[in-house]
Length: 217
Image 1 (cartoon, rainbow, N blue to C red):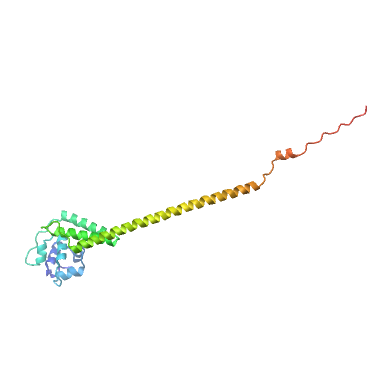
Image 2 (image 1 turned 90 degrees about the horizontal axis):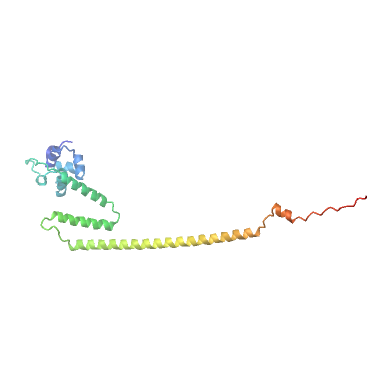
């Protein structure tokens, strides 16, 4: 798509970088209509979006904010180190969005906000938190500690119940085994074993000797 008659320096920048409007929108994380409206001067370039454009493309931030079509495009700075930092932040926030616990996400968001304040403040590298921020962080930490304690107690209860249930099952299995063994023993003792062939032979009466008769001479 053409550079929207180059009514805004953003169109000049995009043309020099040989980017489509959709590609620039994806690069800086905004919608295509936003880029189109800015290039047509129907929408002002916000400071936050200007910062994202400068970070993503290497364009001079002051040049973007001034939006002076008479000023030439300043040299595009190299993004070697900056791109690595951008990728690191992208990975960080991608992982942060996966955190399921709301309290943990709030704590992380507050900490990131505090670090951003340190990054913005050149005079004071360790700016103090406002009383409201300190209160929110403290409450978030207390909620997190309470959730961890409840989770530990719940785990102990479930583990104890499972252990007691296993012991009952083992005791019941042992009693059933003893009952089965006793029953089998009684049934075995009631049955008389069949006599073997040799035993039957011994039980028969002894054969009588034949009588001898005298023969006459």
